[in-house]
Image 1 (spheres, rainbow, N blue to C red):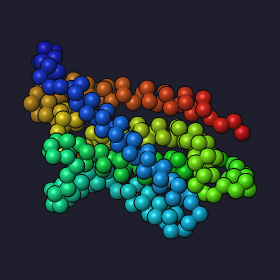
Image 2 (image 1 turned 90 degrees about the vertical axis):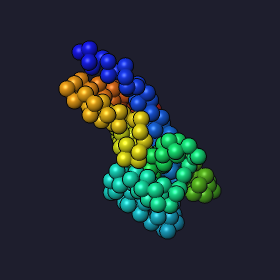
Image 3 (image 1 turned 30 degrees about the horizontal axis):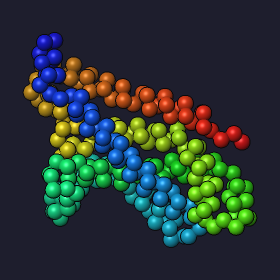
Length: 225
């Protein structure tokens, strides 16, 4: 037990979780913005935009996240010299956020589109009847209700994003949880089970409140029909 406690002093476990939380928050914000844009493209009356939105979702939803992050690090950063900051660690951190956001935007798009499907067709027709074009109708009538109907699936995407943030190790983000856990196990394999349960319980503590909150919010904010 003393050996295990000494590891917690030597390694910054809480700091590693904080890195994953930051990855989740920034990637969640950008994936939400990009996912909303993709959802608008998929429901737009312009066929080419519908096709582009569907192509994006099908490509990135069916591509493993590890490949996307490895491409960002090995292809963009390693081969093309693409950077997002002069500091190497900051640049790798931001490239990991970019990869996480690009991947999860496909799932955010589908979650919002499921929310759009909860909006009665008559409301879109009523918006057009009073002279609103597509974008004003989407902004004022469709999306506000769609977001309320998509809270639960968006919560599931956020939970998946928290857990997938550990894949940032594939993008050489050095101080996130999976990297720190790997180093701890390599250094002290005799206490592998306490190390494993420490990180597993840490993610459970992060994920359960989000599930409870989104379930509560989806019931509280559901649009009565």
